[in-house]
Length: 292
Image (cartoon, rainbow, N blue to C red; front, side, top):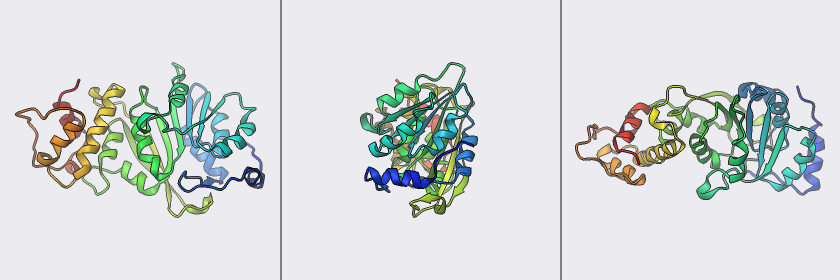
């Protein structure tokens, strides 16, 4: 357990800089220390690992992670919170804080400073991602994690329950979609715990859930590179844009999204719908289009 000041200390610090939580930025502070410790245990970093924490907030979880991880790279978008938490964590030599929008790169990709910071993962260690994410950035961030040159060993993400259900959905269910397929092509995904509004300040209007991703060891070899995984993500998300229509209608547009023609004589059942297909089926269709 890592000691911290009472929340009144932080409330006074936030008032001093005129800080008001933003629902758009997902600024609902998780206050339960037992949940911070539990999230850290789920992330399970070792002294050899680098943890990327997106959304440092007031640094409560950061302290728990820093006590066991080799390095913690914490990203905070809000300048006022950054100015509060930076002095608080200054004594932790293994914590590096970045004031940045994690999705501040071109086309809402990962910010260049974040990419550079996580490139320093030791050869003997792993990259682990921990984040408390607002709904609006959950999908884009998950897509970016799938396209990293070095995939995280695991990710522990606090998201809206609806998002966790979508990502962890099984094929041929109502929640199964392009993002589900993109993530599950390289990770196993499980929603492992609901988190009620009562443990946050201010309280969100929705139930949250903890989504745990584990890097798969059996991913298709065609997805070995970051470029391939990014292209596959574009393809499946385009394929699911009209999820109830058959591939005969949707495949040409999805192929065009990755600038591929649909080969003549393609041995695919074009009478099926994307929502009926498992990850392996979707990867096989993508591979059949050829790759540059």
